[in-house]
Length: 547
Image 1 (spheres, rainbow, N blue to C red):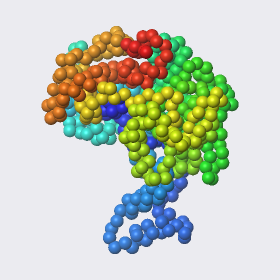
Image 2: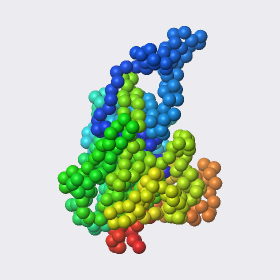
Image 3: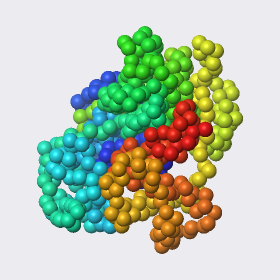
Image 4: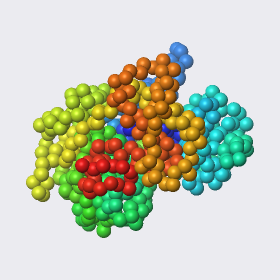
């Protein structure tokens, strides 16, 4: 699912995703950082050897040299001797990180896909600049500022479309209607575009709601309250909170979400470091969902702030945790911003769950070993076997909840119920064509050829229940794959046939019903989601048959 999701997002929104690895939980408030108004190299103290060395090199070295590049390499050398999450962040990456966590960016507010040398508008952000200028999903952008986009890469298109708020971009747009196609000029004044951290929320069945959080940002709590209000209007009694693939974000955002499930005065998390005293964070007044069945989904890519939420809810026995062992990132970073737009993110403390667990996995063997640890889990069978999963915690610190359940520290959150990676439909063929974006290419071509629109179905539920890709269409897809000199073998086709068809269906659903459509299709086959729903009835999401 993750690969297809990534292939879908050749979009402006994708440009602001984290580019420097796992997101980190900052102990600071959502909008704060320490601003230092000086530039490297330091020359303020006689004992500052690094600054003095760089200055001497700049003044006296025999050959010309890029002193800024040398300076950055020196800083990275220092950071490599610390923990895996302390890091120097260059200006471009820091700007992308800030936009991701602050919940907005400057741009026009569209998601697009390159289709036959035209830019197909896949989604238009409500009330964003493009929306206000009259762009709609299905429009095709031919020119940007009177220049053809033929041959441009996605990164180049993003650069041309994005820009500071208040600036103007002129688009040549081909609009499609019942009367045919027409070419028009559209002037868009760039502005702030929301960058949501909750991808979707909807009812899995008559009583069970589903919320997918992909990062913990400044706007996450506000988005969560809005989602909960919607779900309650549809009869919410049980909730599935999906934190799979969520790499973290702001500590305070995680605390705010956990607070909505826990009673007043309950310890959520505490932090402590060598130079930082113990800081405790407690639940406040009445939360949105302090009672009612709660299930939290995690996997090996759930980290940091995600583990704070899962750990607090597991320690207090407020939720059942389902999935696979989380990443194991229990370090807290402070942020130092520099006047050139770069920043230093320095680990200053560890965080601990209410029972005192530190879930940070070891990193003494070096950063490369640390980064490859999840891959080692895959190699050793931990992601496939519950027994192998338990082996990882044989020597881990043990803690006991109030009812006597044992939970573990020292390397991620161990779920209450383990669900292995589903490989029943995966194959080398599926992995390759998904990674190459061929399923996405075919799907958008399919939509064009068949003149599909949202009005082709009475509702999303109608689409989920009635649409099925035909075998003939699958053959056309495989022919396209063969035409690109990719080997197609029958065993792989047989194994992945249903999965490929479901991916096509999910992409179509996203084209017309955004992320809710995408997840409502994918979740009909998602074993972890199916396991999380206890009410054995057909669901609103589609033909999910629960066991």
